[in-house]
Image (cartoon, rainbow, N blue to C red; front, side, top):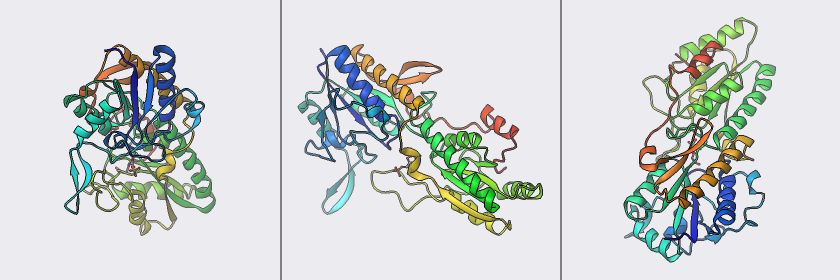
Length: 368
Ligand code: F6P
């Protein structure tokens, strides 16, 4: 079947680099193949409900619509991490429950005359894409994204480099004030179950301790480090704490119960470490949670280039009929891999790997 119109949606948490993908998809589809591109608003929400508007609704994207968006963070077509059509929050008999609304998605996909769909998202979005394929919506191609860089199928995801830049900049700033006040500064960074942002930003920012989800920590080594630095005439320290870091034998810190259709929110890891250290050092402690600042801002040149290459490649995959595949970066090459093989392969920091070893060589403490 000849392709005439493709859809693109961005799902899960936003990240810098999504707009370069959208721009590359639109330009390549129009210029190379003469296709139309429909931007679907807020991931599957735009397919679950055709009257859904937030703030634009589904709309055709021409080159004008994507002009200059490569410098903008976020996504011009919106995103959602609560639009899983297989566990969608609906009201039934006065109660909100998670329901399978895939048939609506299929009907609306046909009503919009879509011939193929590009789903840009993280592991959760790729798993949803695979379920759609299994249920008969076969013409799907994936583009991986996440600031967490935790997808095993690709060496890097766009968004990560920008997030590391933001976190590194924050560490640099906190170092100035830590040094002036003789304080211990704890910086909580994102990453969920993977410590990539913490490890990269901690290394780049010259942190003195880095606490990772992959290495449960104890307070004793951190206290020893802080006090050794104090004794050596450097009465300030920087501790980078991944949001998924947890004490040995303990659980991750979370914020309230999980909302229906959403993931549990990680929060409070740095505050917990600060609380634990408070009685064990005379130095003042302060903690800063960088939070969503890491997800915003103009994408770094690396993320712009990666997003552009992945968007262009995704369109070519459709033209070649390679449905059910997602693009990936391997070394310096953009390649593709079956989505079914790519999902569920979480890439986490290896506690015995080269990166951690390099950090240890710098004297960085991991709380063990
Ligand atoms: O997966 C990306 C990410 O930014 C994680 O690092 C973080 O835990 C989560 O999303 C935050 O999600 P939300 O935007 O729903 O608070």
